Amino acid sequence: MTMDAAGASEGLASAAAGSAVVVEATDVGKVFGTGTAAVAALEGIDLKIRQGEFVSLIGPSGCGKSTLLRLIGDLIAPTSGTLRINDKTPMQARLDRDYGMVFQASVLMDWRTIAKNIELPLEIMGYPADERHRRAADLLRLVELEAFADRHPWELSGGMQQRVAIARALSFDPKLLLMDEPFGALDEMTRERMNAELLSIWQRTGTTIVFVTHSIPEAVFLSTRVVVMSARPGRISQVIDIDLPAARVVETRESGRYFELVTRVREALRQNEAGEDLDPVAAERIRAEGLA
Amino acid sequence: MTIAGGSLPRVTGRPLIAAGGEVAAVRSRRRRIVGLVIVLVVLVVLWEAAKWLGGDPWRIHASISGIAIDYEHVPPLKWRIADDLSVPHVWDIARAFVDPAQRGGPPLGAVLAGQALFTFMEALAGFVIGGALGLTLAVLFVHSRLAERALVPYVVASQTVPILAIAPLVVVALKADWLSVLAVAAYLTFFPVTIAALRGLRAVDPRAIELFRSYAATRRQILRQVRLPTSVPYLFSGFRVAAAASIIGAIIGEQTAGVASGLGSAILNYNQYYATAPERLWATVVVSAFVGFVFVGAINVAERVLTRGRYRPVEGML
Image: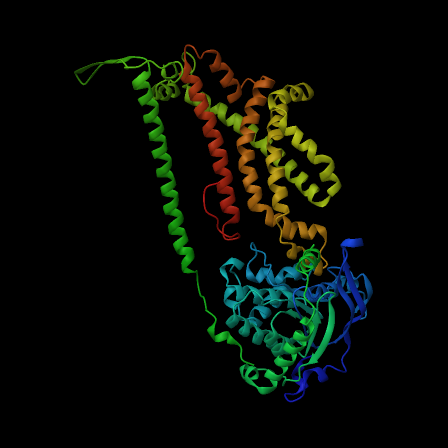
């Protein structure tokens, strides 16, 4: 499962090529509302994500990247096309607890300690107490928050809270980690540190990750593939393989290849914008209904 | 892979803020008590100042350790609202507590204390029943749009009809004395609890619900693990209103049902003798207010004990 086997020089995307397909979207579309009020949020989405991949979805507001993530996670249902998760329907995958989710807000339970927050999914899923404690202790070590086990969420900084949210999502070994702008509310410094930590967690656990972001550098630094989306209707305009070395360190952000890839993603995004000004009312509508 | 673990603040033992918080809590409690006493003194001074200016004349004729005191005060003005019948002297009300309620009987204070305890127990029972009912209704409404739409208008209507009109109906229907008192107290109690609980149960972050969906959690798990814990601070706000209302409900219930003990009958009783002994009714009013004060205070203490360290600390008394 671990990605260490991928080797330092080989691109991670190719390493994943032979692995099992986790997400398979075929001509998936999503329309919010009906009749004249209908807004096409997504159209003709074809996407295949293999086990162990780190795929980022990037695009302008209203391009449907969050909607796509929510479709994959069975928080909403597609209007057309088929979506298979681990060769199951998204709903079956959800009932099988295949998903770990992390949102922009940490959504921790104030009345629970940090350790108890990490144990929450395990409690829901009926894990025995000693197993819960063991896993929580392991995860606290993984996100380096052992000293905060008995604290409550409001006593932690935003970055620490988000680390707890990630630990909680990992607690039950989900096959697929869905992250919706998890570091969007953090300052740039914390964000870069969290990126490094997330990469390290991903390499140690081998979980497949689908990651929604606004940030081009973040997408390039983290991913094995970046899915560039365009708005109105939301479509996949380009998929860019990120062939950076597997071991990504601070220097990676300073390498020439990194800058080339950032430029490629930026240009792909700019191409979309040409002649495609998103109607702000429609964008707001998609956001509102997507959250409902 | 570089992880910025080295820059994480390491914390051992109890945090400093908590120790500072305890000191601050003690200080704020002391300040609160001082504030309460000051307001009480100001009220007494104003009360007596009004009587000094426009009340009834009075005189002291006594001798303390051989020194004869003879002082007469004739107020310069005459206000009906300040005469001894409308507002007795503070010391007359205070003395009423010590004087026997009936010739040769125990002091009024002791009698009122017993009656207050009786009323409090009824109010408490009504509060528990009403609170449970209120919370149940809120849980029902949160899970069933249909039930909410069907029942909420009646719940609201139930509270717009004056309790004085409802109470006799309850007494006729239930007959048994104390049972109808509980029913009237519960009737006034459930509404604020329903309102507060409903707001609290709905105050859940929608993403928390999505998170639970992703865990394939049941509705009952969502209720127990998110909705109820989220509603706790709201619930206690409702409990405070309900606690005060339950005392009123118990007193009205006692009067309507003709229960012989309790503050309700004491109020009726001393109301009849108001012309000759107004300070007794005033003493009863003071005791009634005190019972409500203690009840709401007990709710505050319960909240503090139950939520300490589990919820984000909040400011203020209510």
